[in-house]
Length: 241
Image (cartoon, rainbow, N blue to C red; front, side, top):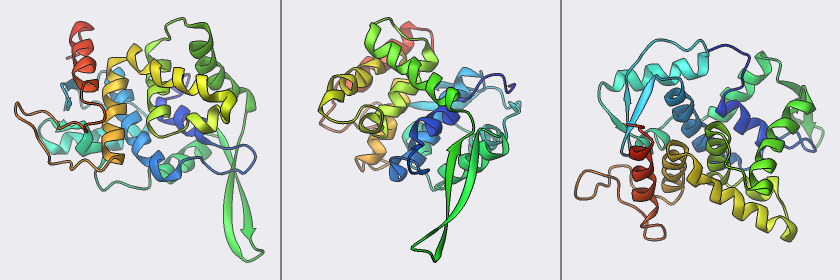
C-alpha cells in the first residue's frame, strides 16, 4: 500500500483534529473508531473478509503501512474469525497517540510542544497541509449536500465519523443539525463501514463483547434492533463475504 492515498484511520484522525486547539475531538471514543477504521482499510486492501459480524484474515501479506500491519498480525494470531465488536472493544487503547505519532512521522501533522498553566508539558498537533484536511471535509460535504451516493471510502469514513460522535465537531450548532442527520444516513452506502460503525457504537453502549444471541451473532441494543440485519443483507448483496 503506497503513500499516494491516505488510509481511512489517518483521515478519521485528521477530521477529528481541531485546528484551533491542536487537540482531537472525542478522545474517549476515537480509539474505538480508529480500531474500526483499521478493519475497514484492511478489508478494502483484501487482507481480511467480513462474514456477518466476524472478521477472518485471508491474506497475511503486509500492506507496507506499519500501523495496519501490526493490526493485521494481531488478527492473524487469533487463528480464527473474531467478532468485530470484540476486536474494537479489546484492550488495545492508545491508538489515538499511535496514529498521531504515525502522522507526525509521515509529515501530515506537526507536534508543537507547550505547557498547561505554565508548568505541565503538553503537545498540540497542527495539520501540515490545511488543504489536505479541507479536501477530506469537502468529500463529506459533497456527499451530504448533493445527495450523490459517495464512493465506499467516503461512505465508510462518514459512518465511522458518526459512530464516534464527530458530527457535532464537523457540523456544530443548530444550523448543522440537518448535516449531522445526513452524515448518519450515509452509513447505508457502505455495508462494510456500516457493520464496523455499528460495532463501534455497540462497544460505546456497553454491550458485553461475549454476549451472543441464538444463531451465533452479536446481540443488538434494543435502540437499533433492525440495523445489523439490514447491513449484513447489504453485504451479501454486494458480494462482501
